[in-house]
Image (cartoon, rainbow, N blue to C red; front, top):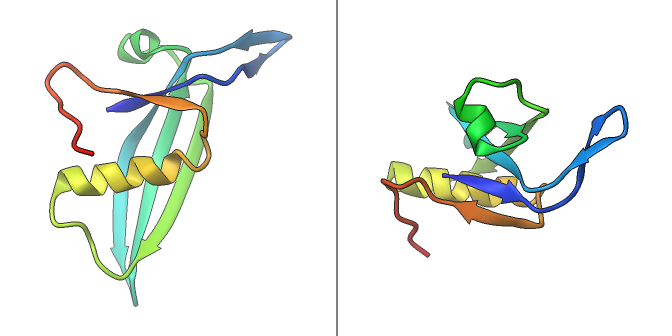
Length: 103
């Protein structure tokens, strides 16, 4: 899963792009007094560029805490993407061919 960011992004030197691809590269969970979830998020010009190994245009670390963890990995990823969407407010979900989204 990933997100298409519909906002215009300035990538430098006066070049702007839209419809960039945002995805969570990995998630780290630490259990202290509560569960701290760290999402390493990358933004690429497109999903195709990301899959071709092209450099990212932006990195964002999103962290959140919870008293409990979701019951499934899918729920963990879904909650993590919900947290990322707080920073990317104009997005649409990108579902890979072998995935389904439960709302």
